[in-house]
Structures are given as C-alpha cells and as structure tokens.
Picture 1 (cartoon, rainbow, N blue to C red):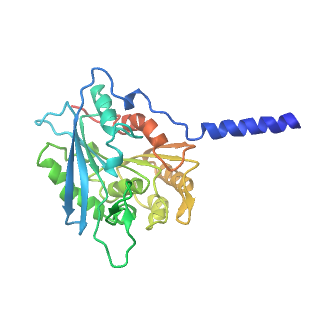
Picture 2: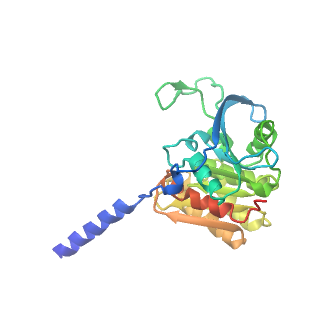
Picture 3: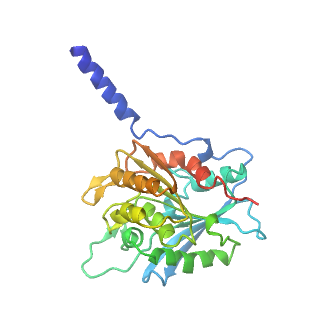
Length: 297
C-alpha cells in the first residue's frame, strides 16, 4: 500500500512536470546561411474604420522579395507579441528559415497591435507593463466582436497602406491570418466574414467563448454552407475555464464542427495552458501545413 501511494505520487509529479513543457525547434532560431528579412515598425496609425483608435504595427519583408512578383501576406493580431526574437513565436526568424527552404511561399508579414482609444469619464486607469499610465485598449471590442468591422479595417486601411510600398497578392489563397486567444477568434472571424479576402487561418488558444458572442461559431459552422477556408487550431487541456466559458471545450467543439462540415482543418490539442508555449513550438509545422500546396510559381 505504501509503495502504491509513492508510485501514484511519482506519476502525478511526472505528469505535472510534462504539462506545458514545449520546446522550440531549430526553425525558431537563426540558422547559418539563411538571409534575414527586414522588419519595420510604424507608429500612431489612426484608423477611420475603427474610429478613435491609434495603434503601432510592423511589416516584415523577406530577403527573397522582388517587386515584380506579388508576395503572399500573413497578418498577425497582437503583433508586438509575434515580432520578438526571444519570445514564444519569433515569427520573422521562422519566416526566414521556412522561406529559405521553400517550405512556405515568399510572404510579407503584417503585425498589428490592437488599438488604443480615448478615456471615457470615470474609467479606471490602465497601466502598461512598466507600470506607467496607458490609454484604454480597444482589444476586446476589435477581436472578440462578431461582424466584418475588423476585416474591413484590414482591407480598407492596412492592406492598402502596405500595397503602397510593396507588391502584395490579391489572391485570397495567398493571404493568411493568425492570432492567439481573442486574436485567434478574430483571425477566424475575418476569414469567415470575407473568405474572398483571406482563406488561411491559424488560431492558438482561441477564445471561441461568450466574451462577445463568439461561442455561437460551432453551431454557425454546422448550419452554414462550407466556406473555402483552411483552419489550423491549437489549444491545451489546461487552458482557461471561467465565466465566459471553457476554452478547451470550445476549441474541441470548433474542431468537431469543422470536421462535420468537411473543412480543410487541423487541430493540435496538447496539455498547455493559456499561453504561447505550445503554439510557438509547433508554429513552423503549422505554417508548413497552411501553405503546403500553395503555388509558388
């Protein structure tokens, strides 16, 4: 009996140690001989589609880009979290490596932060990571809301701004969109609303819950004619469970609905929590899967 208790304790300890223990692979680190793209930060973008908001954003251009040929496009919500070289995702480095190996097409990355908005009377003061006062964030309104407002922001403002500088494709098969948490449901919502603009979706720990009505998507998918979009979902069994819903269950319901309607989808379900560890570790493979049959010519 004593030894059984010890064994159970050891096994429980091993499970706790293994949970969320995801590691980045070589494609997430700079490799010898791989040319680096350029990353340019833009500040104080004032939107008219999403009124009274201002935001920062970045544009990554791969070293292989040539102006005479349209490049693919991939948009990332919460852009500042994806552009770093030491974080969970390290997208510019991953793009460098995969484009160099021709495992994804020449793709311009667009990384967009959620908008900040003016204060309203008696609103609590928000602080940034350094503890300094910061303007209120419009993130939940932009990301968790259903409808086409954010999609229009991309099509009417962001993509035209990028197209002034670079030759980007108009082919929806050459446009992908990515996000995590509320950014994940935002990415899906953009393609769902405008599949003739974006057809590839990458969502990690997506908030398909009742924050602003997004819990309806599994039912909508089942009752709506299949749309020409490809979806990669990631979540973990230790994701959130709160008053808005259960994230693991919501993502499993999304996957089941996509399967029922014969979508081109993939669901990676691990043991992670509400973070980017698992998604970052599998990002190179997720990108290979999303772009696996795109015509590079």
